[in-house]
Image (cartoon, rainbow, N blue to C red; front, side, top):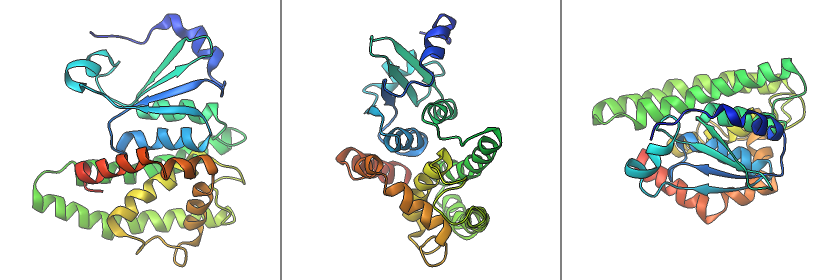
Length: 242
């Protein structure tokens, strides 16, 4: 069944856009990839949420999504109405607004979005240019490029920006942002490939401060220690190689 975004839900969506006490389900596969940031935002924000995994993606769930891809977010109000948001960028943006993760003004938001885009480029390279390549020699070449070029360049720029903000565990000001959370997520992938050879407390103290700050959030720490998270991490390792 081909569906489009239901314009009759406009009022319901707008009414709930900033409500934080609704419940959430994030449907995605049992890997990190494009679902990791949404799961991390929900966890770090202390939201009431759960993971939902497709049971028969090709024959069932794929036919009911708006674009034939995942992730999809389903938000349920206390009265049982369901709001659907599709596509990872749209979901992350929606939740970032809802949970006040975009700073204090438009200038803060611009900076946070810029940092998020830069972080996402690293995630995309690993997912598309490394994990997505089947030819063994090409994959090995791209993995080497990730280790020797992509990560060092990323670390140089982001360490500088975080130092400029006072090395306080945040990208912007002194409050949690979606960029902080996104960095913690991508570091999991970087560590899986490089260990702590390029990002560590001694060599990259400003980046490390964000890693420690995010992982100290009780609800987030609970998530990454959960059996479900560990199962997703194992799925990522088996399917994607990191």
